[in-house]
Amino acid sequence: MKTKTNVKAGGLDNNHNQGGLAVKSKVKAGALSAGIQAGDFIWADKIYKDLATFKKGYQDIEAKGGGDAALMAKAKQYYDWYDYLDAYRFARKATATG
Image (cartoon, rainbow, N blue to C red; front, side):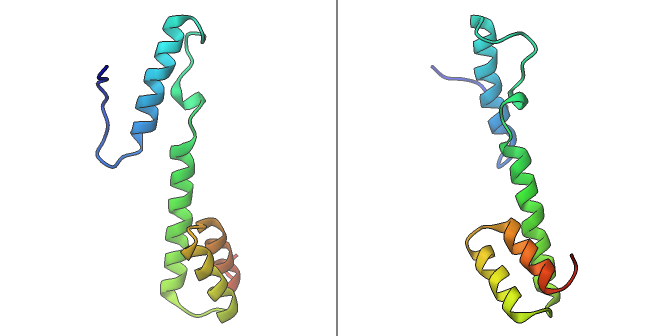
């Protein structure tokens, strides 16, 4: 069965489109109440946006340079592990911006 979706290229809407189809199917079958939306179940896009903000925050701090070298090295380690929250936190601490 082919499903038609409106997916933005590289966008975050795919989760909501696919989830929306699943929710509509369950509402139609009577398994979920009317008015339920995919956003009631899917938080991936919100988390992704937060992580992208932390990633950019680390990159901005790192680009300015300076700060405690040991803490910045730890921040870089977290960044390399894709742990953008902790990378950002250590970078802020290293530069005393937070």
